[in-house]
Length: 186
Image 1 (cartoon, rainbow, N blue to C red):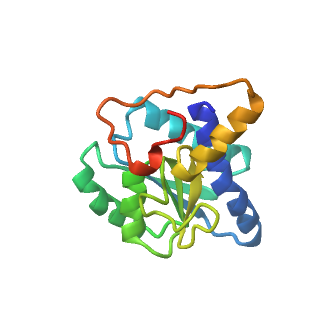
Image 2: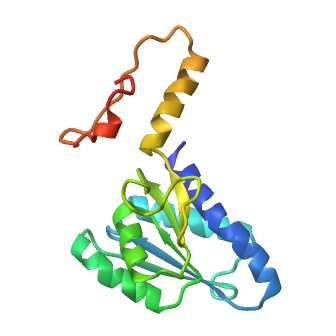
Image 3: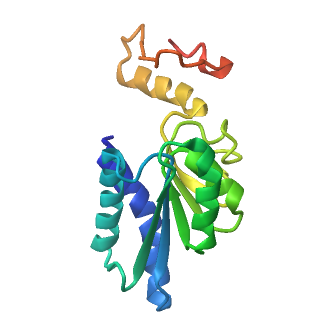
């Protein structure tokens, strides 16, 4: 899935319930957006642009029925808790956190504001949710690399390509491999 499609899916996950909610109340929706890097980074501009477009397609007009509160930590992870607390103090209806560090910072800042995560690899292992099937708490979203999905993906791949006998995957140099990542056909 391409990055734009992924971000649009995250925005849709947030926007759908808000669309129903907006029909019931004249309140202006306030959406928080938190990233650990600079808001001016090309990937963040692209992601936020996709989110804005998705909301616009659902009838949200910035300044009339929706307000976006964007915050970034400019790559200084130690700043994330303060930036997340500032964002939560604005009383957003939902916060979109597009990384594990951003999600963790918002999670520590609030237990009541809904948090939608994107671009997280292992929300269970990182302590963001209790499980993928029953996340609990105030966090929801998508994952793409959760360890509990590895076996399912290999099973699906084997069904799609029954003659397959070996699978390779690229790994980031210097990445520490956890014990639960081993033994899955690598």
